[in-house]
Image 1: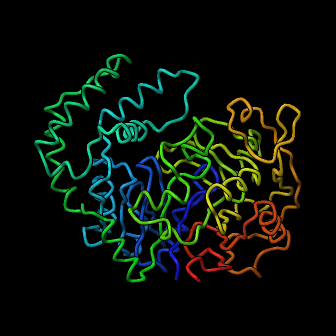
Image 2: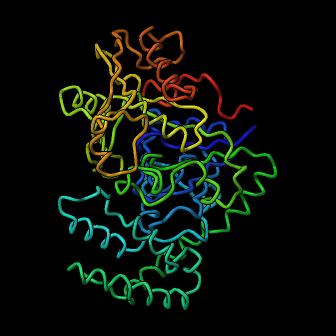
Amino acid sequence: MPNVTVIGAQWGDEGKGKVVDWLASRADIVVRFQGGHNAGHTLVVGSQQYKLSLVPSGVVRGKLSVIGNGVVVDPWAFLAELDRLAGQGLVVGPELLRLSDTATLILPMHGALDRAREAARGDGRIGTTGRGIGPAYEDKVARRAIRVADLAEPAVLEAKLDELLRHHNTLLAGLGAETYDKGTLLSELLAVAPRLLRFAEPVWRRLHEAKAAGRRILFEGAQAVMLDVDHGTYPYVTSSNTVAGAAAAGSGLGPDAVGRVLGIAKAYTTRVGSGPFPTELTDATGRHLGERGREFGTVTGRPRRCGWFDAVMVRQAVRLGGIQGLALTKLDVLDGIPELKVAVGYRINGQAFDHLPAGRQAQAAAEPVFETHEGWTQPTSGARSWAELPAPAIKYVKRIEELVGAPVTLLSTGADRDDTILMQDPFAA
């Protein structure tokens, strides 16, 4: 049985939480390998709804879950999430959740700097969540970050805070924002250290042993390929690599551990925040998709921008992300729309493009070339077999397969974990 890596194939919010939760029943370990608490996964289990940001979705299934070294962790957000889950009757302890001792910490000044920069951009805002993810990654690559392991060494922690505050307080003061006091931060970190350190370990060792024993590992990505810091619609991206290759670097395993790559895409397209969106709909159809699909950010609550399915973008994500199969979600949201459109190409300043180019002006100028498809009146909502789908819906799915160059191996027709049609088990050899 191979491992499976799940990544988003659009701009995030594709329904990865439900898919990962569904696949977790077939896995032994679930690993989160990048991002921070700017990502959000909503899981619906019966009458209970779980909203996860840092904690991998496997905990809901009672599967060992790991936060890898590639994740940036806000200690207070992490502990608040565990407390919230406990309030819902799901107590998560170290026997169920492990945290890499080399993961970088997000501190209060990271969020303050994130928000101050965004405010200073004015109309040029990039749509950051303001939670400090970007500045924390900056500190990581600049080799001044405080990591989980530093919480066990107070003298080292204090010295590193000196360096960190020299950098951040200078920036904050220049932006007219409040600066931070070392003594207060040190006390706050030492106060949460015992709760955090009980989850900490060199997770690469545990994962290596699990791999050697043939245990099935499910790697859970956050955000999506078109938000990748290298390959996405820069600068309107996240601050980490979201492609499948990051699962190896972000967990401490080799590239052979990534296994089969499953990309998640909605049957239409959404985006939160700023940035190019060639197929965006600002009319009644766009509002209908938003209302029917309940398109609000899990973390921010911001309404998502909605548009037609963009096969050009998803094909690009398939190639960049190494995606071998697609999980197509929210097909039921399209029920009752008489005519559907799919972008099959772009025109930019009169020139045809079969991909979204890197240039910022070119991306903003991209105009979709649409293909029109017949909608369906028979509902797909709640369908749990291929035979239950109306013929136009089947035709729509098959055309998406042709356009993006990857088979649809899993189809989601509702929020419930059982509203799923499986064509091919990603864990099957």
